Length: 174
Length: 144
Image 1 (tube, helix red, strand yellow):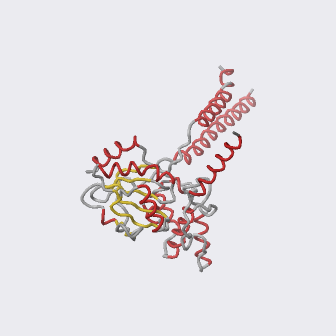
Image 2 (cartoon, chains in turn blue, yellow; image 1 turned 30 degrees about the vertical axis):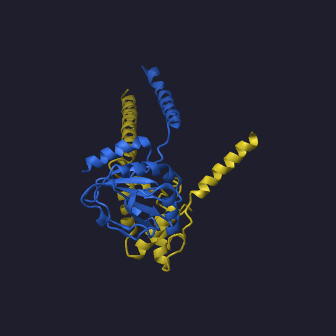
Image 3 (cartoon, chains in turn green, purple; image 1 turned 90 degrees about the vertical axis):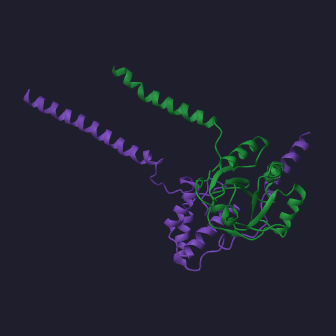
């Protein structure tokens, strides 16, 4: 019996070494998820990001679910998700944009080049609203219901395969 | 071919540079508070908050634009009279324990705090039994 106990430390060591080796092969989750899901949007009122559209405020999120898209003209994945945002908008989804650390002329250029799916774009020059809703990068897209409550967060650019999920979440938020 | 690959790699390196904004930093990103006492409070707090973009640095150590914006939040909130604890809680409410380098007891972290105590108890129990046994052995020896 005693000799069996003697193997316990070695078995433990092998277990932890194996666990460490296994975890090293697993892809690291780089995303920091917002813990604001289910919480109401914080109060905010942002100036227009460029002359073409009104700014964005918490008060705009009433009546029906909308998408809140955190993006920036200097953000490359935002170019990749532009066609998907446009497709969502064509399906009747209202998309409110918040441009992070951006300039009006850059915003206008980006929209002229890659399309404009937004109904409003607020300018968040110091990432204030971004931090207040628990977003940790661009692009990120939130589903906000008709009462201004954050219902879902999509981190990273929206791929074609993400569109049905977003539509479903918008439907769920109705 | 090698030249082409090198050129491609260099072009890719440039991409990450292009993916930065050209905006000036937020007012309190790189400027200290005028009151040294408040600045010391803010600085102590900033060293215990994790940069969300860079993940292995505190916001005090990072030059990422977002870390600058977080420093601005910390300093302007301290200036507005919020306590460091309130600001930490404000951030944890948004990003979870992840954002804080200061370990806190929560529903997910409590085993980290309880496990060492349990181990100490086990060690204590084993020692007591062993030492107690030795003593009774010794006493037994005396009798014999």
